[in-house]
Length: 386
Image (cartoon, rainbow, N blue to C red; front, side):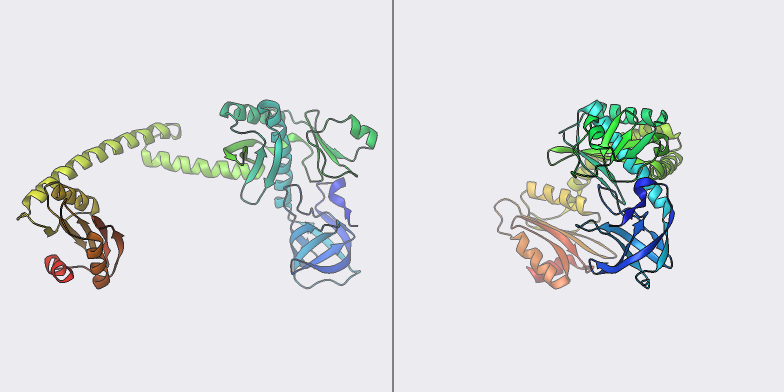
């Protein structure tokens, strides 16, 4: 069995080891060492990356029999040779912080929201805790987040060790261990005790901060998304830049952005209502200007919305509407059937699209779409396609 150096020292970045075997993991070359500081993916924490001499370690995994394999790129070293391993420390340091943050937040969710952790995933793009409670109120999530950050500010010491059976029996663990022997406990002061084989910070202040960024229902539970440490700072800085950019565009202070956006929303709603009214008036004028009492076949300057509004006015007056609007790239078509008419709008559209090319469709009483051809003589096109 490979000696797990990270159990004794999570901050060990560089180590020497002997190559025990060269094997494979999911059809990828892999190395087994006599000892390693590389953490294999487990407990929601991703496997470490780094280098082993001249080769690159892309991932670290643990097999069912407990063998730790280092998936690598490069020329395999000889079995029995010595290699120097070096971790991708920035990545490991973030993993340590976010794993410790998960323990802490799981503890505060239980304390403040009575929501025990069912599982956690500390991925490359998101950090989540699935809490075994449906619909956790925002106020309780906020209380759990606040307690976690209070404990970070208090710089609580963190200890990881293998207690003997008597000591283990006296410890009130937050959850049951997944193994029956060699149970390792991670304690955050006197607040949280969890069985865990992962890597962790030595004090809560090294987490930096914890921020809950979302919560949603998931399989009868609540999936809590959070961020911490360097990842949290990066996300905070990115959002701050976005907020400042919006503030600059809106000519206001960052704190005034919500009010400015609300005003824009009200103004847009008012403009939309006004536009609808004006479009209806214009549609009435256009419909009234089309001569005759039968089907109205006409090219109308405007967009699809104006075509629909005009067609609706014509249908209300008892006339079929076969309308189009052209621009430099094609022709928008709207076909509406009046009550009592025998016009098959869908069939007419199919004939037009087959001739001119386009996308759209509809039913017998209504059809519309976009032709890829600019139709210069609409009346002639309809006469030929009828």
